[in-house]
Amino acid sequence: MKLINVDDAREAARRRLPRIFFDYIDGGSFGETTLRANQADFERWRLVQKVLVNPERRDLSTTFLGVRHPLPFMLGPVGFLGLYAGKGEQKAARAAHAAGIPLCLSSFSIASLAELRRDTTGPLHFQLYILKDKAFCDELLQEAEKAGVDTLFLTVDTAITSVREKDVRNGFRSLTRVGPALVLQMLMSPRWFADIMQAGAPQVGALANKPEFGKGVLEQASNLSRSIDQTLSWRDVAWLRQRWRGRLVIKGILSADDAERAQAEGADAIVVSNHGGRQLDCASSTIAMLPEIVAAVDGKLEVLIDGGFRRGADVIKGLALGADGVLLGRAYAFGLAAGGTEGVAAMIQAIAQEIDISLALMGIASVEELKSLGRSALRAP
Ligand SMILES: Cc1cc2nc3c(=O)[nH]c(=O)nc-3n(C[C@H](O)[C@H](O)[C@H](O)COP(=O)(O)O)c2cc1C
Image (cartoon, rainbow, N blue to C red; front, side):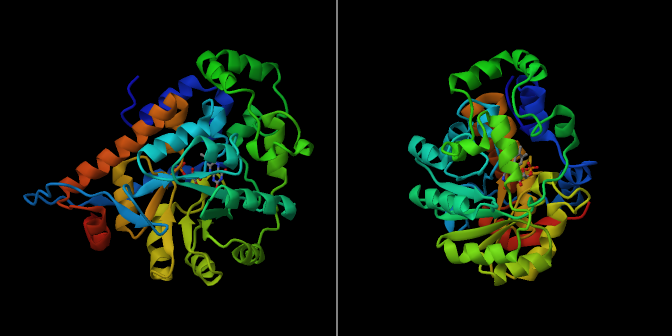
């Protein structure tokens, strides 16, 4: 099946993956209200069409996180990529790098940062959860420094893990080993299984020297989740700001007050995020919160956004409402599960093409011009 858009990739991923993993990617918390709102609220905005201008060539490049990128989006941190495709982190990173954009590696990954650095050459960022064991946190930061990472994302919206009901039903995270029901699901996904096994039995890369977290990836994942520090507070942000000399991005901000506090604590950027509707259900969509957060920080720190971005038009709306750049989540995770490196590349290409064509039809020559037009490039329906 040709992957023309994210819906195609989602459907192909659904067919290819064991249900437990598809549901883990696809699902949201509790009633999934926020998950739905993240996508649905893009409908509140329409793009302004402008004819007879014909910008001959469009320039999609823009600056975010202090660097000029050829596209206004990057691949955000998504856990366990190496369970959706063999060597999944490497495959996603290669597709990102071929397009000239960074991947942010999740702490919950099959490839360790050192492995991914060894296997790929483009820009890599790292996402950290604050763990109860601060010495282990420090080891992860040292690994990031050794790998030459200059931008660290601290995720702050998951100190307490919410309930994703599909995962509860499937036993994701409560399973500590592969039982008969899971074996059956795996046997029903033979292409996925062969691909994963070729890469070797998956383990959480960051736990390679930590036998106390258990053996198989399922046991490691549930123990690692439990080791996240539930008392996470602004004090930890202050500690990290002292400890980490590179660029610090706080991911999981959803209010103007918290955005101002992040700036006061010395963050260089924030990601307006509700973890893709996987944490506080009935929280606002990110696109709805973006304008007031952008107004509150008033250019004093960079504002990135994620949540529900599936289309080039969604990215245009995010940029017009003041975001410096966009992070993709499920859009590329589905691409990876559906078709490995080519699947991720197809999603990047589809979204980039839609941005390019839409800008042309809006009479806008570049992402920079779109950013300076701001909200005037949009209309309420
Ligand atoms: C399967 C999955 C795993 C994720 N794992 C992480 C993670 O390990 N760390 C993190 O900061 N965010 C994680 N996220 C959240 C994403 O970084 C991002 O906020 C979210 O996916 C954006 O919403 P979207 O998928 O609708 O684009 C995960 C999201 C998904 C779907």
